[in-house]
Structures are given as C-alpha cells and as structure tokens.
Image (cartoon, rainbow, N blue to C red; front, top):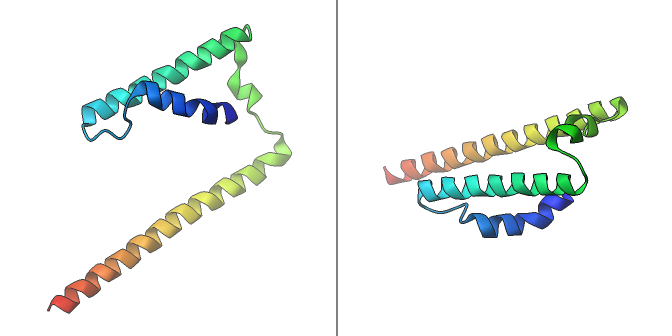
Amino acid sequence: VALDSVFHPLAYSVSGNYYDPDPKERARAECRHHVFEVCLDHFLLAERGETVTSYNTLKRCTLPPEHENELIRAFASAVFRAFYLRDEHNDNNNNNDDDDDDDDD
C-alpha cells in the first residue's frame, strides 16, 4: 500500500488525464496507468530475483485464521455504511426534489 501511494503521482503523470472529458482519451489514460503499474511490478520483482509466478501473492496475503473474521466484519461494516449512507443521501435528495416540485404548484 505504501509503495502504491508513493508511485501513484508518477503513474498519473506519465499516463495522462484519468478524468479527461473525452471518453477515448480517459480510457487510454487508464490503460497506460495500468500498464505502468504492471511494468513497475515486474521491475521491482526482478530486482528481488522474483517473477509474478514465483512471488505467489495469494500466499503472502493470507491472513492468520484468527484475523479473517475481524477483517470480514470490518469490510462488511464499511460496505453497509457506504451503501446505507448513499441510500439515505439519495432518499433525502429525492425528498428535496419532491418538496421543490410541490412548491411550484
């Protein structure tokens, strides 16, 4: 995560505008961004004498069983809050829109 945070400004600067109004240019920028990240991954793995296959990401990212439930609970809670707040926000906006329509009559 730290490495990704450090290199993201560089990835954005060499890949182009991720938020370009032109959908084709935005898609090209996203593609260049991903290609840059893959190249960076391969470079850093090569520096360690590893390949994508030999590094075995899934094995290295496996949590001890005693932490799996804790992580799942935290993730589920975050997803619930994100969707609950979004739904509540949308409901409030819809209610405000309805109120505006009533005032026009």
